[in-house]
Length: 166
Image 1 (cartoon, rainbow, N blue to C red):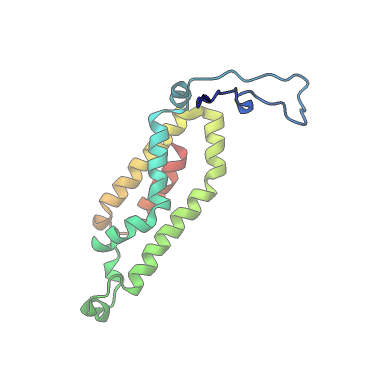
Image 2 (cartoon, one colour):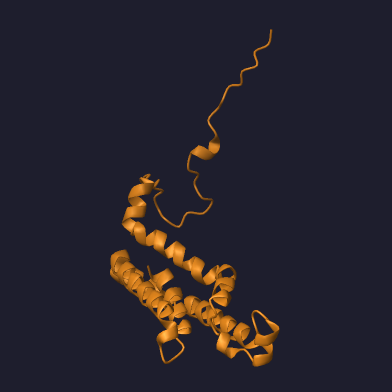
């Protein structure tokens, strides 16, 4: 009777391959590092905060209905739109989209200075700066209705800038 067991051979992908062109005179196989140690060296919790705050900017489609329900920029609506129950009204839609566009552009423009800060001062300093920006943005959004100026745009902007920095 034939055996149904399969024998397993070593996969060739388990061994590092030499590149076809090596500009370095000597080939050195990098030592394996522990994944947890690498994340701790990158800032650990700040790494998770950074991923969470990027969702704020690039997950805008999920937060926009919440902002509309909360009445953000409802003062931009005309009396006719309020009477007809249009949600969101035209002015509100324009201001919310402007808030997103400002934050998205600022996040992309800030990529170069953020990389410089991270390279020069390290993950701890950039994490502290990012955490400060996130806290400032959250405070602006929390108290935006009580400010004499539009606090939503700077609040969302600081949240957007704090994500990549941390």
